Length: 257
Image (cartoon, rainbow, N blue to C red; front, side):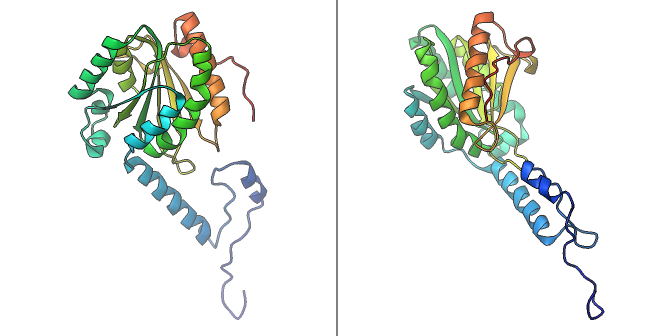
């Protein structure tokens, strides 16, 4: 206290050094009984970024151009959710194709040979994650699959899509495996986290227990190289053992910093 005024400068937290080890909001200090102004403003910014990520639109044309760098063709489809508002209010609509897209998949299936796998890239709850992280992830993974003799469908870019949309697409293409890459629900430390959901023998009404998930794919989380390693292992084992989900464990041992 100076000149009779209270001291409102932040009180340091003795755990402050631990903040270098985690993006979690720990050891923020305090100003009186409240958070310091800087920590409060950081929280508001993170919340705004997470909220914006949920509502951001997918630039499907730009994403398709980026994905063609993998050497695969790209087809753009749309779920039954006509716009973002429907998608957020009606999760069921994001799990099914609209009629035009269903016809497009049927046409593609008519010209396709027997397929080992298909990748579906969807906006999910963070279009930013799909837009940013799906192209470099697939650039690291697709050449390795093709070198191993995998027969891959064109990449499907799905607007307003949820995980289960991949079941209808995989079934329509008669693909043995579908891998859905989509933006995960934004958090206060990561508004752009990409998830990869693998399903063997995709069909309507698959349960989450029949899927494998590789999550938090982004440079600050699980990098593109390690994520590609995990997916290559899981896809290879899924095809060899003809299963996925709780019966298939990641025993790759290929994790690296």
